[in-house]
Length: 80
Length: 232
Image (cartoon, rainbow over all chains, first blue to last red):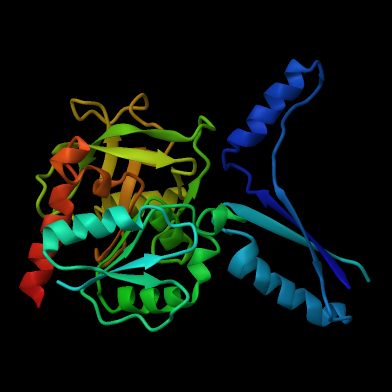
């Protein structure tokens, strides 16, 4: 089973990298962009095939290591 | 005073701290490899600067879960002084010993230069040889030094006088212009609640003897040696 984890900055946390990307896109002539936020994407291949068991394990991984919950949110998608 | 410097793959200020401790203490610190969970009994633990694990995932995130760190956390909770400098500060926040997080510098540039700091409190083993309000000049060298915490945490740090150093101008004014990296409240260094853990982005070990161009970092190591010799 494959897990896809998106880690994003919480609302209100400044994202200077996202800002720089936003400016660069504007400089390239791409209009109509209100905001850019940069995050991380992590894929994990799991031996576990039961989503009910995989999800709590993945949540623990996010809480302990993959995300810093002071500034980041995480979202777990499981291929079932 | 017996001290240990934790060495991670990618540490690069461990030798500088070793020299500073040796000069102040007159004895050799233990250079302790992170993979060895058996940390000897010491009076002081230093988590040095560098790029542990190549800053993978987040600065300090991997090192915070190294075998030795469980022991460092336990010792810190038991009252042993722990000093984290630069990457060491990042590791201590990731390990949960200090609140908040060090984010990417607001200007997105790696900063390597001397900065002015105001000493905000001297009732700690780390800062006892400074004078409250003293302006000291020591270098920063980081890409992720932008201290962030939620408002409640910041108010607590302020209320409990746990901000040890703030970025300031040469006259000691804490201004936005004197803030190199966007840190909340111009924070350069903070203490834990029990005041035995200090994390700071600037490098006192890099200006701890005249040959290096300045000695403003030296009182930190002298003060630690005096305080911990008294305790022993």
